[in-house]
Image (cartoon, rainbow, N blue to C red):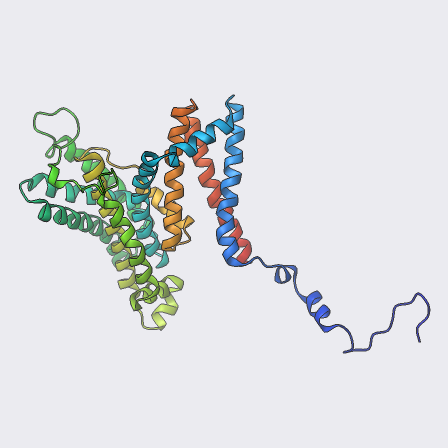
Length: 371
């Protein structure tokens, strides 16, 4: 019998075992957010935070943030023309992002997408300039193949430096960017410059050297090519033995070597594949947007593709969503400047703030989940 007001005596083993087990759990074990919710919610939360910071900047500039963001949304998705522009911007981001996904899954840090983009555009563009008499059925496939080869060879050079001499691929790919950009600039001003021209650009490609549009719109064949690689990369990484090999090397070199995987071949393949897609992107852009070789032929896709791959969690479906998000942000920032009169530098600053906020929130959410 217990005294009035005293705590009852609980015999060992006779208490509420479920409650004891719950109390023994650490807080993070009792309250754990499902990974799927983290993957979906973190980028959205980051975008909201970035837009709120951007709204503050707009208010400081003396403008209406509601009007500015309405013009951003209208510029990216306000009609068929706007949606077309967003798709055209998303396609190169998607293609380069898929290439970086394969490289990063193998733990190969390819930072040379920009140089590989330029080399693909250069080799593919040279085919268009040197063989303009070829029919479209032969010229376009040859250009596409040359673009793939150009990016692949430029990336393979960095892979060989890493495998044979132990040179960090981060440094080598970054330095190779400058070489490729300057090489194209030199050729555009010299050997490949349009005869009788004054601008640093080649002669315009013939009509047969331009990727055709689809369904009477400005959406061209390059968009379908980019979408084609989405299931291809998924199958490569998660269905084929090659993909298992690449992911095993990406998890840990020593484990892969112990399992009998050739780490050097995996590094070479991942780098070459990534470079091939960057080179293909360069050729598609120079064939459809510029229609000639120029000193500057990029929209920064070689670097933006890295952010797309990381935000897409190195998964093809995630890369699709991230590429559309980035494209809408880029197109929308331009519309904010044009439609709402926001200074161009401020529109670009808001774009950068949103991107950084999304990436930071996503990284912090997954770090907390891992802990």
